[in-house]
Amino acid sequence: EMVKLAAQDGIEIYHSGYELDQDDLDAWATLCHMATIHGTDTQIRFTGSEFLKSLGKQTGKSQYDWLMKCAMRLRAQSIRIKSGRYSYIGGLVRNFYHDEVTGQWVAEIDSAISALFGHGDWTQLEWERRKLIKSHLGRWLLAFFECSKPMGRSARIVYGIDKLHQMSGSQIKAMRSFKYKINQELEQLTNLTGWHISWEGNNLCVVKDPKALIASISK
Image 1 (cartoon, rainbow, N blue to C red):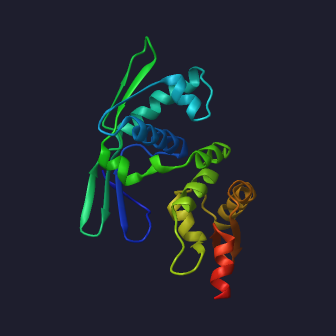
Image 2 (tube, rainbow, N blue to C red):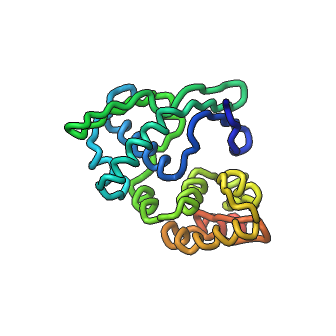
Image 3 (cartoon, rainbow, N blue to C red):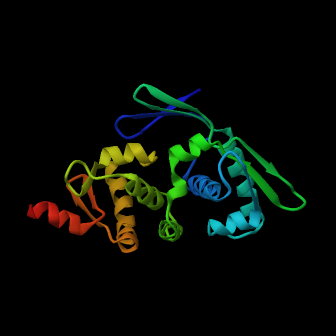
């Protein structure tokens, strides 16, 4: 059964399969990054240890077990992304192959979905600071606001607490508790990114370029 996910205005996203988390996003983004090197619609080859180390993970048995389960979750996804009159319908990964003797992996990703998600464009700086954030909510906030753009001429990105709760898929019921969890992440996000982040009531305001905010106010 297809489930509709929370998405930004103008976009509709439906999926069937396992519920994915930020670790799965890291794995998927790594595959997309590798696809920019190897080329999409081609076989992407890597060893399990190489892949795990690129995610900042250890290479013990539990991590290899996680990698296998992650591959199965990504392969099982079916998605529909609708924007206006057009929809993309497909999967995140076409196929995985694994040699249990040599530890070699092969992944095949469709070029359309790789280009659509665009995670292969993340810079090395963005990768390095993302790996420093351990919590799922912190990594979600970083990825969400990195992909968000200011509205109109303002340099600010503003989202209400209810919208952030819906978009993040948080299981926390009370908005006060959810806001508290966000506050626990803000100091590290500010230190890593240099963004100016503040609350205006229950609206979270992010300014990626403080100079742009000053310029917009002074006009």
